[in-house]
Image (spheres, rainbow over the protein chains, first blue to last red):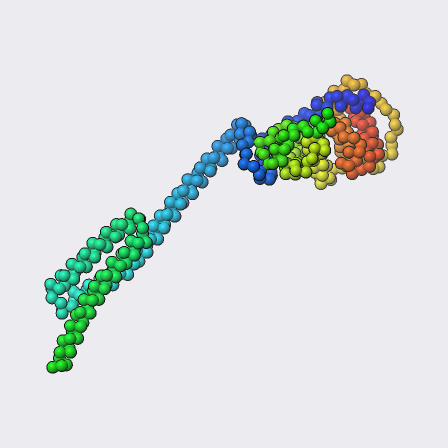
Length: 183
Length: 179
């Protein structure tokens, strides 16, 4: 080794004149690393001010998205409720139509005395009240499936009632007719 | 004694092998400047040197299980940096070995230089060498590889490495004298 070589080797440290941008390089390195097998993930690196800011931004974004997810979840829940209400409205309008039609038939019927009509309508009113209660229950959302079932039963009863009434009217008509024939 | 040196930072290396980010960062912190300087000496461009250093650390940490203390962690890592730098230079078509036809006009006279030259001038002088000469001077004089190691790195024979080095050194001294 000559003097020149020796001189350089002795002063090797002076050749290291550059300083690496540690945090920038590490950020890129970290993203390329395999996922660690252990859970110890605490990185000393947060002591750097820029990374602190970056971390804050990340945390803020995380929170924001969490809140977002929560709101969307709520909205989903609302749409579920909405779907149930929609279903109820469909059932409602279907049966309402039927009941209204049959009540009209009863009212039109000439064979019934006003007393009979009144009695029948009071039954219907009772069922109406029950129906109102069920609707309130449904909004409390305790067990919407069971309440919906109850509402359907309520409607079915009304229709059954009306059908029975109409049958009676018809059968009495028939009876009248039969009488005529027997006579 | 030798084994002690080989096992420098053993616990950090072992933890890093398991993927401990903390230990990996500590190792990174210990070696990043040295590795960056090695790469800068070869690449000269900041962005290129940074790319090499990043890729080297990623490769080192992801393949740490293959590190078996046959050398120190530092020299293992350094070898990765050197290899990546050489590959990058080759990709950029920058010669890593001196061009052959420059071989035939040398006389073997050892000029001695006064040991009082400013290191800064030597750094500058190395920069002014043809690219192929720069690498061999860097590898031998500054990185401290011997001619057998250099022959592996540059894929040349050890005797070529020797002769190229002497030519490069001569040229460097000539340049430095003019500075």
